[in-house]
Image (cartoon, rainbow, N blue to C red; front, side, top):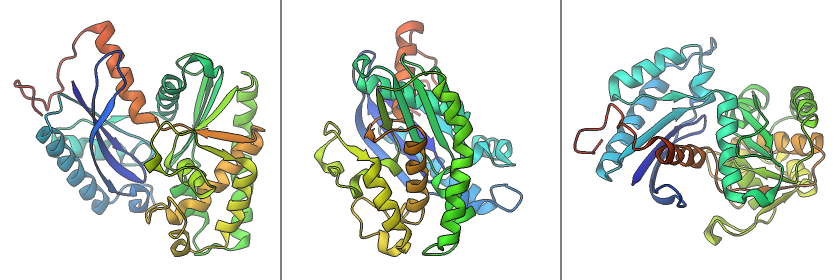
Length: 325
């Protein structure tokens, strides 16, 4: 069957279509995405403004039509911290449903961490042992640790790369003072969380599942995406520290010349590097292994498991009787 996953993130809005059935690896069929940093549309009171809401509605309609045109049989639509933490989030979700008929499921931070961990476990298998997964998004930073398919501990903190860039690194390039203050804030936010994780145990494998980690690994010498998903990619803490220093002296335009850095990601690359560096230091880990599967794949795999145990699902309200969206 062909499944669609519509991901409304803080940096991008992305529809992924995959061909999949229970027991098989999902195979990407097509994708449709657009850079849309909802964090940049926040008003001082924390609400998403009219321009941001219009952009969001337009993309959801595009995604709905794209999925229908490619005969998707099911559509999972979800949103993460950008809408979850907006003061008018419920109103935005209601507007999207009214104008597009698509219901966006709002994932909590812990649900986001759990489903990403679920994808990581399926990718690496049981041989990986206890896994610690780290995921730096635009609005939040998710962490999950466990030895089973679902983590024993999963949490989210407001350390997303786009959020931190907006709130702490206004200058381009940023000042040494602003970087120092941001480092202090990141560490003070992470320290109590890391202590909770330490009570669970020590990981055998530490993974990174976000675009931020993939970009940082690429800058530090990892294979490009063209080499395929099965090439092992690592990011060493030592290399990360060196590149964080180099990036801090670069403007956003200069960062575009680095391998694997897009125009949308360039401004927030430093904030992401500082979060990654602090996490590896506080967890006392020398390296992180990049995992190509993340939240979208976790939700797809979970849906396929439902088909095994519960039988065929009723189509969502926006799917017609003939099976088309």
